[in-house]
Image (tube, rainbow, N blue to C red; front, side, top):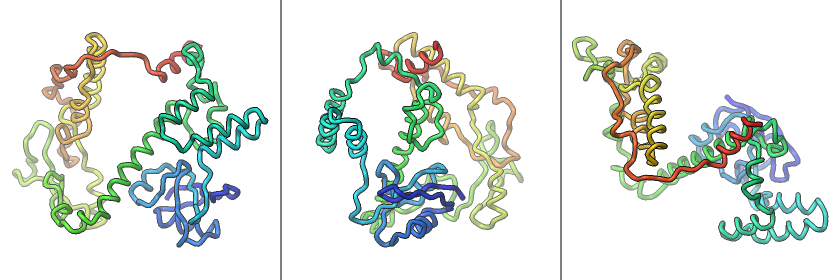
Length: 327
């Protein structure tokens, strides 16, 4: 179970609750805020509706959830900008009205107007921007985060957004008429690690083609069968044939060096397959997990780089980190 924070649209009440599932948190939240659960939508502060259990489980502890009644208006980013600027003085009120009136238009227009109103910094000013929370605490004011740098905060927000896209896509596909009507779409993937009833087979040590346990019969287990099987299955591992720490990571550093010297991009698909897919991963029983050095398993330098040349430049994050280090 994890702890979360909940509030209503007016954000005049805030409570901490503990829950183990979306339904659990939703029910407790409605009770705590004294809201009718039949007319409530639960969402994050950026407006993402939480209606999928898988996505909910990916959210970190202490996430703030907004419980919005049907027909109730939630204060958007545009409203927040308007209210803050309007509270300063009459001169900035005109600016806040400009922002609010254009906030609902297309994204290119938003960027253009905000850039002109907020007087986007030139290159010399950008170099003075600090990345660290300790050096720019005002930037982090009001944020529900433990991030120590601006880049860390932005990365986590992007990560949450991409996850929401993934789980929302999954939810929409499962609910679609096509998926419901076409049973073939719901059949198990033939490339899955387990069979149709959930039995997993050990693929053998990294330098073997099969598991040699009991004269080639191999280790087998079905973690769905019992609690004991589930616990035992937790000792199985996904073993890299080309080792991650000893070989793949050093090769990635070497690829980075090569890419900078010849102005070409790293072949990220190659390294992605080595690190995260069954191209280089084998499911093995703990007995077959050889933690010794995989001497003969090497990366292929010919696949380190993409053919197309690119022009490299420092990112804004690089500049921030460099300035923090120098200062």
